[in-house]
Image 1 (cartoon, rainbow, N blue to C red):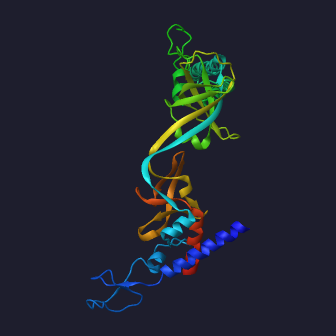
Image 2 (image 1 turned 45 degrees about the vertical axis):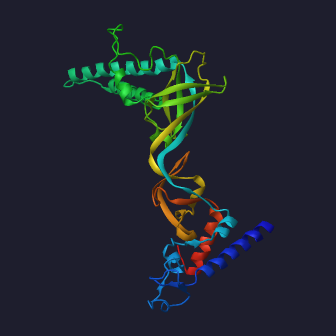
Image 3 (image 1 turned 135 degrees about the vertical axis):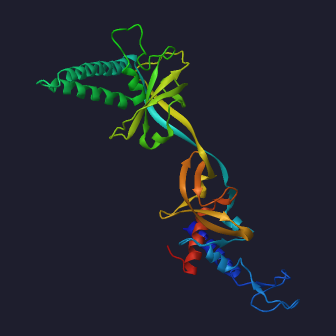
Length: 347
């Protein structure tokens, strides 16, 4: 209760001080040091006085909805704990996390072998159809083969393979087993594979060739891996998609189905980056306070906001080099809303 009363008194103090600042000030364009509190003429040169632009009217003109610009002197800024940082333009960084397991070679082989057999049966059935298409024949068995092929392909897509890798399996031949393009994922030097389940919202950050960190909690180890393929079917229950990861340069012994954690460091395009605490999300709009001249803090509405581990990435609303408020936003925002209400602001 005492803290609430203290905060209330601070806000009242700032509001009263702001109104005292908001009094109209007139100055001489020729002798700018001369000011007055009402219109008139300069006693030095007789020139008509001009209204100063950084008065209450200017503050009101910079309002956004129910947020108004606020003027704070140095003492008031210290009282609110206001600190600012410069918005910088740099790549937005994000760490994508997933859980997974160590796949067995037998699991990899069976899924691919099932597809290869179904594909060979399908090709043979298609040739039979072309040969006997003018005759009367029951094609139910051939439709069953087609369904079997589709099911085998869907299993591979769910497992983490993509269409490109599946197309390679179609070149497999039983007639020349010594001369094969190779079943996918049977590579010399790659002893283990990891199947990792990434959330749907992270799908756009993944691509083949990305290096990943694989944590093996059972061994308290971290090993390197590379994403080979990203699946093309999302699990409707967990909203995840599988990716197949090569485990590289690991000389230890992993156990099939062993649990692992996977992290991928992603670097996106350049954004104007601000700290996480600099953004005020009202539910209607996203506000960032930018420090202008003479202690004026102006609310700026930002859009196209992307979350990153190194801050918020902003595409529109503020510019590189702007001094944005990173601490003291809560009290500043309260004062801004109060000023807007007194000025007749609206949503």
